[in-house]
Length: 338
Image (cartoon, rainbow, N blue to C red):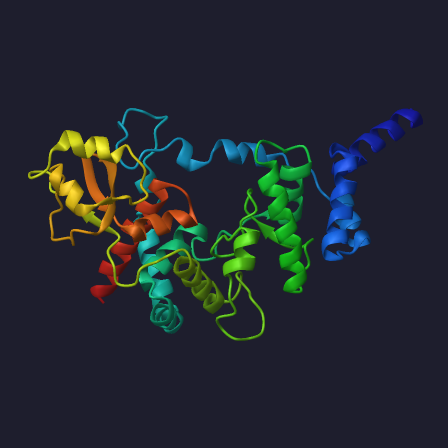
């Protein structure tokens, strides 16, 4: 009986690190020490303290962009969900308006420096973390280690290994305890849900207190989002989307164009030659793409400008960029009524 209890105790107390390849872990520790002088004992302690995380694979299966349409689901189709309905809600609009009111000075300053409209910054933060209410419950070190070296290692292991390196360096540079940081199931951090490499590259100390804090400093969050957009090519005071005229355009050609990349690559004057026409004036040499989306009353189309593409640099999804744009427009309208 005692022997049986001892066996059970061993089984249930075996650390999650046992699921990792020991040689891979040792190699990673040596690499961090040789390249960045990272303390070996600290890294071994982090790996030894890893807790099993069975939720990760389940979350990846539920990633919204893989299964949703914009707003064209048949109401009888229970397996289909409208992406629009997840984010363009009364609550998100009212919370966005409240966030804008409470942070108007930081938003105004960010817009003046980086040229990114306040409503775009507000929409991003709302979609990413509901204005800080949902920044993640997964221990980031454990998550990234599991996805790159452990039981949840998959086809993107190389990417997550790079993020694990950046995470450890980010903690080192900002005097953060890597064992205490929590984020999303994919390693995204803070209110703007930056991955570790983005944190190191784009996050800024916008409140000038000597440190970058994307969890508790709204100034830093707002400035960092604006900086992200600026560095990815945001064009101040330029359009994001322009509706296509459904009466003046050849709709077969419009649909064909919408199936191509959302990265702008064709000048407007070429679109006009093919009878794809905007419902308001656009300069002939403006480079555009065509964005299609399903609505309840049929499919609608718009020209996507460079700024639409820049939004997809934050999250490489056409649906995501549509959500940011339309939520920002609704928040801006709500603010204009105050």
